[in-house]
Image (tube, rainbow, N blue to C red; front, top):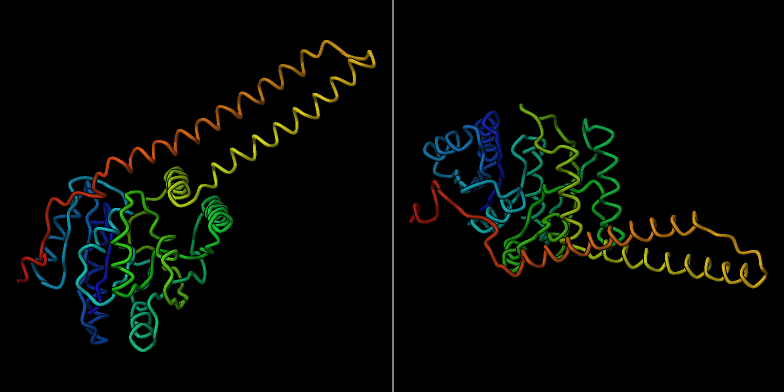
Length: 310
């Protein structure tokens, strides 16, 4: 059986159409499936729409969070509740074409493959600033971890053993796109064209993307800490050069008052120290969040849960 996980946040305009399209394609290709929607604390009528869908079709499971926990938590809530032999994660706006799921499923079923990863043949109609920041983000991840995620997405099929490996990870601060590659396993790629949204607007803005990127980088790599160390080395070398220069001028009798140099040095070192302390503090806050062992998400309601089926 194939489990299809669809995180949803304020998607009242999309959930019904998405469910109908996906169910139709699965039935047309005679694939045994379940559809798992996760309502990530939506403030519109998304949950009411999902309850109606689950009431009309027992193959549609709807999970309702107690509040908004974010897409990463929604992904792991879906993974924790799958019953299938494999699972696919896709967006609710149909920008991940459901037809590609059939191709992914066929590759998984007929080959010795554990992960079928959807790779963007193009990034669709994205803003230049968004596209540029995404490229920079993936370059940083690749440099820090060695995992190339350029044009990758959350749109991928995972074998049951991969799902169980991800569920077994105790960490609370996760980055699914990187962790699903980090666990290894045999992987096959499928290329897809990013479709236009059926309706509504993307919930990702430049601000939320920057916040998500920084959180993901610090959750998965220690690159920012290495940057702090690099800045310290650069400042030390700069101080050494200027120290030698100052001693030389003093010995030769050419030393000046040098107030401008001193002020610039103080401003430079102070700013780097403050930025460094900020980065270290951010990592400490991440450690603090981890050691509290709070759950990744809290489920308020489930429609058509496993208990309902028994």
